[in-house]
Structures are given as structure tokens and as C-alpha cells.
Image (cartoon, rainbow, N blue to C red; front, side, top):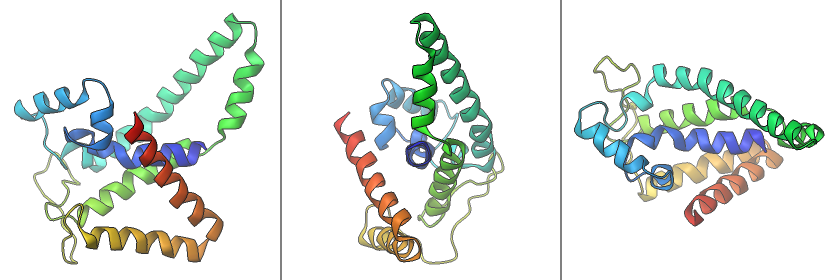
Length: 179
């Protein structure tokens, strides 16, 4: 589950710079913070949060935060007299969270490069990178066609992985809508 959950969250995280993004709306107070940051000129959508610099920063920060959370859980487990429960949860969670986060985040940036506005990959340099192929508007049928094409190719290449990715991405998306 670690690889898939962290991949899904990593895939949503770059849009935390947009006040109406799916994840932003479900983190209490985040839409307000984003609006204030944009109004102050600290960032704009597909700028800092969509840069290689920020991606690398999250590759360092996410594992550190994960380990801090694990130590916190361990302390709770010891305090309750059941540290073996934390070991069991860690085993159940599995590995791959760092890889999942990195791949999800980077794939989001690559896909947004196809969008009409492009991505500021090299922030703070004011250079917006656009795809050489025709640009795609978010929420249109070409975007859906490409997404399903990529997922279909993954199913053909590795059926067990493709079906798992399609099902889990749909499940994560639906779960966030319930929050």
C-alpha cells in the first residue's frame, strides 16, 4: 500500500499551489493559505510547486517526515506497552513510499507540461516549459483519452500492475471526494 498511496498523494501534491485543487480543498485552511500566497506574489500555479527544486526538496522532506511519524508511533506503542503493534503496522504498510511519492510528483509535472500554460521547471528562473506536442486543456476529452491510453498501455505491459494502478487511483480519487 505504501507505494500506491504515496504515489497517489505525490501525484496530487504539486497542485497544492492552486486554491481549488482536489487536495487543497480537503486540507483545512490550505485554500486560504494558497490564496494569500498568490495575492502576496509568493507563488503562482505551476510555478514553485511544479519545479525540479521543489520536487527534490520533497524527496528529502517526505522520508524525514515519514520517519518522524514512525518514531512518534513507536513512542505511542511503547507508552501503551505494545511496540510490536507498530512493527506489525510498518510491515503491513510495506516499502516504496519514497519511490511512490517521487514518481507520482514527477509524473504530475510531466503531464502538466502538456497543458496550455506549461510548467516552470527551473523556478526561480522565469522559463515556462511547454510540450512540443499540441497542448491539452485540463478536464477535456483529449486529457481523458491520454490518461486512459497511458493506463491501458500499463495494463497491456504489466496487467497486474496496471489493474492495481487504475483501481487504486480511482479509489484514492473517490476517497478524497468523501472527505
